[in-house]
Image (cartoon, rainbow, N blue to C red; front, side, top):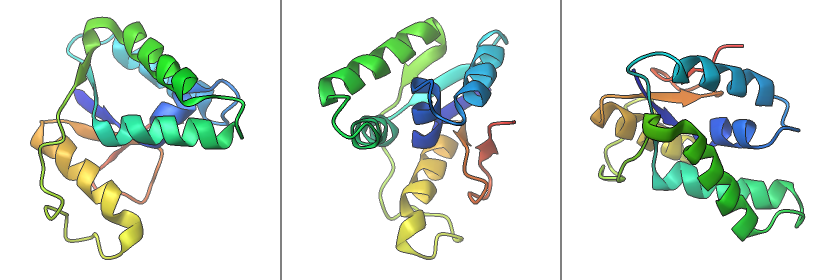
Length: 134
């Protein structure tokens, strides 16, 4: 199974003080041990991780430190991690995407689908996405 990691999954996994860190870390560890599992990243979730990490730390984490944390996270996945290009047009959105607040979710879902993956998220409001189990 391939999973495109959503911003909220990356943030929860990356920061131990996040309320969903244990949940996501447990899931990543379990999936990583399964043959055939591949974790995908793309520009939007990576940039979202960096932005949210710096904002939520109120200056205690620099952009450079957030980038380093992300690099370390992906390095820990070894060969089970792949970066994919964001090769889908912005206008290729699912029909349920009706307002501005869901456009990125819709785009990431379509990107995951185009690469034979599931969008792994903590957001229960994305039809067709894989919600990381509790």
